[in-house]
Image 1 (cartoon, rainbow, N blue to C red):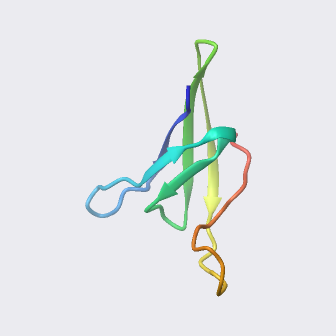
Image 2 (cartoon, rainbow, N blue to C red):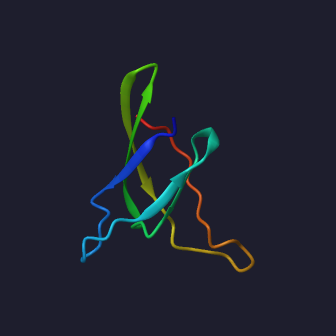
Image 3 (cartoon, rainbow, N blue to C red):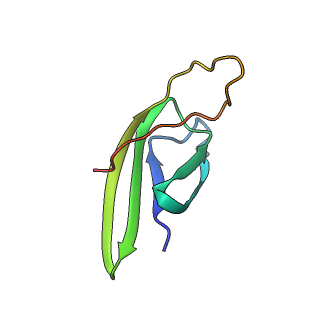
Length: 77
């Protein structure tokens, strides 16, 4: 089962939450997120509920010729 996720304090002024999807290998693709925040992850493994949180900070620089997709690696704790 793919992990469920949510962003803490990620809603905009109208209360809209960001969109996203979970991929294989623990990758998460999100759109409409703030530059900085915390990603809460919850999943069920062997009928045991588990959860963790990952703090992220995105840089706002994109070099010419680079993809506008920003990547961040981290450990969910």
